[in-house]
Image (cartoon, rainbow, N blue to C red):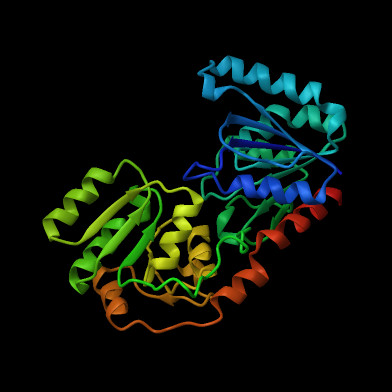
Length: 320
C-alpha cells in the first residue's frame, strides 16, 4: 500500500505532537511509500520511503496559501497514494473528502475529542472509517466508528530498573481549566508532597499563584519533548491525573508503560491498573498518603495499547 498521511505537525521536538513522528515511522514499516502533508514541518529523521510536504506554517504563509498548497499536494501526489489517513484534523477531510471519493481513495479519520460540530459531521460523512482510542473519545454516533485503543510507543516508554525513583508526584497535561491541575496542587499541599507539572497553557499564572498561596512545593517544567517526558515518568514516585475530558488520555498510558503508579479521578480508566478516587483534593491527598499498589501495568499497555499493534490494525481498516 501507498499511503497519504495528513497531520498538523511533523516535529520530534514538539511537546504536544512530537509523538506522531514515531507513528509515521511505524506506518513506513508496513507500507511501500508514505507521503505526509503537514501544516508545519520541524525536526525529524524519517525513513527513506517517507516524504514530508509542508503547507508552510513555519514560513508564516497566509491561510489562503495553506489551502492552495493542500489542493496542490493532493492533486500532484494523487497517483502516489492508495489511501488516506487524517490525524485529528477533520477539516482536511472536509477539504479533500469529495476529491478522494472521486479518485477512489479510501479515507480514515483518527479523532479523539468530546467536541461535536458541523465540521466533524461533514468529515464523518466523507470518511470511510472513523478511528478512535475509546468509546468516550468520539461522541458522534456513527456506524463508521471503530474503537482501536491508543498507540503508545512501548519500545520507548518503558521502565528502567537502573533509575531510582524519587518521592515527588508528577502531573502531565496542558495548563487549562479542564485538566484540573488545581486539584493536584491542593492535594499535594494537604499531603506534604512535592509536585512536578509538565505542560504549558493559559492557566500557568493562576496555578503558580495558587501554589504560592498554599505554600505547596510545585515545579512547573513547561512543555517537554518525548525524551525528557520519559525521564520524568521514570523518576517520579506517582502520577496523578485529574482531567475532566472523560477520554482515555494517553499520558496515563505512557506513565503506566514506564511502570509508574497512577492515581486518577477519570472513570474512563476504571478497567485499568490504576487507583480511582473522587475528584477532591482530600481524596487525592489520602491516596498519596495511603496508595494501593497496582500490578501488570506494563503488560496491559503492551498488550492492548502499543503502537506496534495499532498501526497494522489501522491499515487493515483502510484496506477493508
